[in-house]
Length: 251
Image 1 (cartoon, one colour):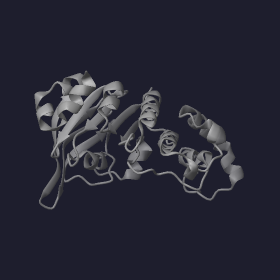
Image 2 (cartoon, helix red, strand yellow):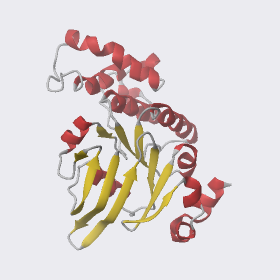
Image 3 (cartoon, rainbow, N blue to C red):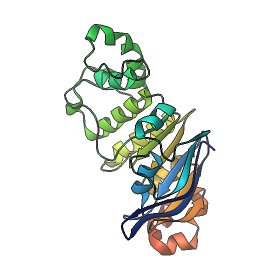
């Protein structure tokens, strides 16, 4: 297992947002974290990526105990996350956006205003990641001019530039039309080869197509876990909140 959480909990005063979660993410897998609004998925993500301190429990990433590590420290170890809201530099080109991600592995992370001449040594690798997500032909375009689905693809490219061992993707298809959902789903499956992905996702069709394992949350606790077929057939899951939506996607 590349990621292990044991007894992970988060309390905000008297309110418990995440309660006693055990989670195992297998290396090389695509693992989904699902549940209705308010289930605690994003809070759990914030705990795993260390954007929130845990009230209780432990987190191990590989051989490293990251329970009290900073987000920067876990990113350096190879655990990198995306966010629900688009996080590109709007008035930089696609190539420049990916190049920013490449600066840390290249030892230029704290030299944001480095001359263009020095940064051009990263262009070939930046183009490689843009090619991976199908955006190489728009490398010189400003990110602000991209359609929303293409911005999601650019975010994947910048995430890959950080050379992650484990990618945490937060609602990667949220707000996308059907065609863009298909595009981003295929991209995730493609870039996941040789990597591990843990994703919060609401689209059951996406999960059924690409995820190896699914963890279902409800009211901050783990309700069920297994393959998509096992979770879809679980009476507790069906009764709790998924109903016809999950039945229809299995059919």
